[in-house]
Length: 556
Image (cartoon, rainbow, N blue to C red):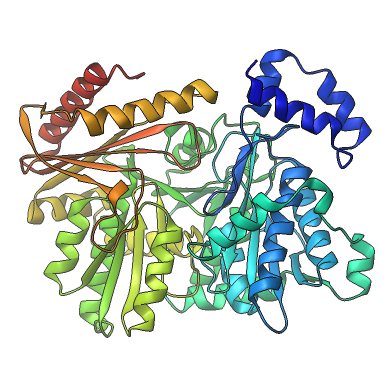
């Protein structure tokens, strides 16, 4: 066991703020458990916390959540004048409600009003609530699509977007000053009696639905057969009601509509992966559904399967971004283009997206991966008079309109079903529509490689891979020479510094590399551009991935 690990472990054992019961549990830990739970402090990163639940410095627990909330309270009280309030929500994961209540008690003890949701709600609804309730900030307890042993803590500022500088840095500075003994708490009943905790729910839901419906193009069809699964998560609160309000019938997957943070029917509740659709796909085949839609547990991502030529085809994150953009532009050509139209994508999203937008006179803005960057950029552009009507990133994240400042599944699923109904009337599927786009602009295809490296050794491995790519760039890949490298660690254009690399190989291949901000992975993004057909693009990307794995000695 390393010296620093032992030092952290002993500090917890000697900390008067740690309960005797928890200290007894700590004493039962085996050396390897101590190493993993204490080799580092769980970092309050640029949007909050995320980690495995349990006791320890590197874990999500009441101590780390309490410290984060006290840091947020201190920062708000130092920087904000007048009345202060925080909207707090939580997903269906284990301890999410308890962490939310704990946060409310701490904020109340610091004189800050709390709008606490009366039940679990999606992440996009928390973002919407911050703006709707004119709150100073927001807290969402969620680990999104991570496995069941994880939980997380996301912080939003008054514009409804996840925190970025200077707020993230200010809160982190407060966090690093604190000990567990510094955390103040007020009992929940006292906080409610004194008016520091106000329960909210249906009024926020209704306002969200009203805004979402204002973006509908009014295309619905009772004949479109839809299967929806919330994957045991929060989407059940917004997706079925919204689809019904538009005029769709929707079949809800029965086993997975039950809220359950252990995710009993799926090992990894992420609509990016085929496994997440197993139950919904059986239902789709039984009722001969046209489309299958899924949201992840905190309902800020969506995945889509489409029936095409007798089988169900998955539309990937980039393809859906392209389809939705093209659909918006088709509708706007009929109804009129918004004033100063603009769209936003992440640096690792499909280059076809920008090509389509620019052809229609729509400005395209590129930001770092993550909707905290996308939505804060949208806020800036709107302040300059731009109409940002659509934003997306490749990892199944979409945002429509100006009322949610994070990824959303509700409005994008509504729009996807309208788009499917639009094409069904023409005798087409979304796969047919995508093929039309490819024929017009060229075949673009993207793929990923995300090897997992767990624990302390994993962090070192990931760091070593990034250092190797910087010091000794790959000179050839899939038959193309390296022609350009962009190191985002130095900052690029308007993009702030970030640990990411862009490697261009001729005019046919781009590869990005970056460590994941939320999981123990290093992510590689491969982009094939203007190929002759999809099969050619698939073979090309397969060769590029295999070569990269061999060169870097990666896990597959």
